[in-house]
Image (cartoon, rainbow over all chains, first blue to last red; front, side):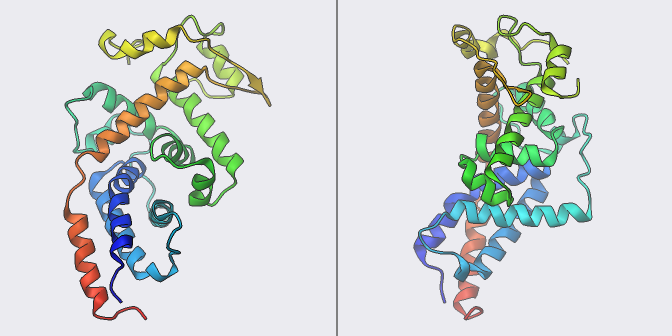
Length: 183
Length: 76
């Protein structure tokens, strides 16, 4: 059977965000492209299990995440403790946005635990609801919420985002309050 | 690492300063101030948008190719 044009358009429409998610997860554009390609292969091979009218992006993200996870178990993320190598592997260097900020953010993101990073990206960037993200990650909604919260707190610490007017406690005190390590 | 952002990039942070910040503590976990959350959210989105921009065409080609192959009757 040939692919329904509507379905094909839905898949294509999801690809850019799917690829951005893959880059965020793997920290490497080439691996991300492989992941997306593999995801599309699997999706088409199993297209009969997709219920028309349900959430195509969520379905594709689930496939990609599972692929990444199974690969991840085999070889651990090489750049987990990256000191800039994460951003270096990204070929896309948008000149229009601040290069420094982009790079700083990539590095900060790479320092988050895997679970927190994916939750934060799904919610904060890919535009999924907490319910959808929970489904994609195969966990409870509450788990996603707490991962996102921890990810934000940690990023704020790493990136030193603070406003002196906002906080009484200094950084160390706040780290104690939030139960986070002082970076 | 620097402790502050360059002044050019903090244009929108200024307007956020005027907003009240809540720092509530529940279940022993302190929530981040709303303006800090907004700042992280904005940075996250521009990071992600930058990754989205240069999506190559090869995936639509691939999909076309796979579709053709699928048409030859691989699945039931």
